[in-house]
Amino acid sequence: MATLRVILGDQLSPALPTLSQVAEDDWILMAEVQTEAHYCPHHKHKIIVIFSAMRHFAESLRGLGYQLRYIRFDEQVRSLTDAVALALTEIPGLQHILLTEPGEYRVGQEIAGWAGRFNLPVTSLEDSRFLISRAQFSGWAAGKRQLRMEYFYREMRKHTGLLMQDGQPAGGQWNFDSSNRKALPAELTIPAPLSFEPDLVTQEVQALVARHFPTNMGDASQFRLAVSGKQARQAFLHFLTQQLPLFGDYQDAMRIDQPFLFHSVCSIYLNCGLLDARWMCSKVVLAWQQGLVPLNAAEGFIRQIIGWREYVRGLYWLQMPGYKTLNSLNAATALPEFYWHGQTKMRCMQQAIEHTKRYAYSHHIQRLMITGNFALLAGLDVQQVCNWYLAVYADAYEWVELPNTLGMALFADNGILASKPYAASGKYIARMSNYCKHCHYDVNDTTGDNACPFNALYWDFLARNQSQLQTSARLQFSYKNWDMKTDADKQRIRNKAQQLLIQLEQL
Image: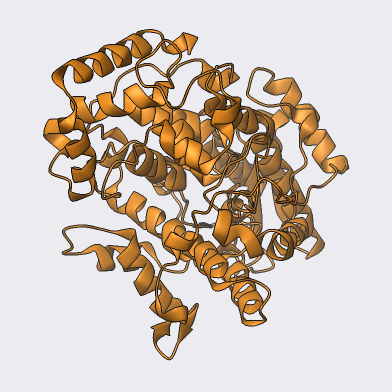
């Protein structure tokens, strides 16, 4: 039975189940479709990395002898469904459609209609590139009152055997997060991630994106990301030797005009399939065993892969589709325009957004504790904020973006994901960065004309949500400090916050 094997744009892996046991009369379909490129205003670099990586992957499949129909963007095929319809029309004798399960719910809903539309059997295979299946995560979650990542992560360590010795965690503890919050010394030299000059394929995609997406964020001519499995592996091995040794100590640190620090940028490659999670983790464990990286760095990195990444994917599929509509704190303030252009006097926000504009990337603390924290404190519209994160980051797909944004950054799920809101005043930013030393605003002031906006907005956030949040054990200290303030001080803070919210676009 001749089969049409469909490969999606974030499934660019040789080990993809779709490529298992391909028969001589089977065909592979890959397509750059209009709806996937336009459903949100993707950063130019995000579109370039996906389209160029798709074209490179398709060429490698042709080199292996596979029959492949590749639909380019300029062919004006609207949707994945239309791409399948075109392939079935062009290629006679196809009797079966097969693919690996999609990562995003909306794509799954589209695929669910294929059997009826084409009157053919459709097989969706489990995505074995992840370390556990959706069903396994559901089994872990069953009956639990709270789904905390830390406990899931411990089970994943046992499941994978990573950083385990005689059934116990290496170093005698599961989590070295307390060792991963050091401030960055001023004299420390920062290595740059590996970058790549665009080849002819990528140059063609750069021109396409510049032509068809002129108003999207980013400069197509500045693209320097990896676009093949070989390049992605080179980028990761560079990180392993040059950045990972200090990743543990300084993974939460920030420095002005330093977008990457000791972060890998490899989430971009992992999430579209150019890198394999098991391979990455095995290389990190080996580096630790050989004494090349300390345990807190190895553990901190592996926790991101087998802890957070697997956890948010499982949570996403467990909670969808209702999860996307949650807004437990009733946040409804319109997203300020400076999230798109970066022109704000708040140096921390300017830095995070400028890095995002230039690289389609910022590291997790900038996302959580700068742009996410501001959105939380200001009560920005949850859907608008989620759409922004999905659009501007090259590693953003809804399965990973939505729980991290809606749940962790915005606490819009009322604690399904996080045990407390990640709300912080300017003091946190001053402690973890040198942004405040170069800022228009005074981080030590709360209510003055030049006061850091994060300060008044932090206290106002606690006050306006007190009835909902004051029972949280992890916020008791914060509410105790709020309650110790005089009524007059409370009123001045809240008045300042209201003034800031009215003048958001001028901050």
